[in-house]
Length: 92
Ligand SMILES: [Zn+2]
Image (cartoon, rainbow, N blue to C red; front, side):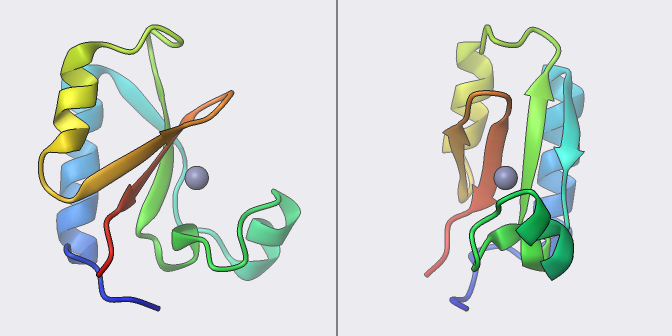
């Protein structure tokens, strides 16, 4: 697995702040191999190392520009999925 630009603690702190600031809830964080397989996660999903999470904004599906701007800072990246936003850390 590639090295991340953030530590686990930095990622957790960033997600916590992001969720507090933008009224989002984490619906999936760290996953075991078994659970990841059950939910159809990628075999090398960053959920397996706790370096990814899925969030749902209270205002879903309306995503504010402020939320998107927050993602652009640091090394956070995101994918807007049908039911949630997959948030992960850019890796080397
Ligand atoms: Zn995800």
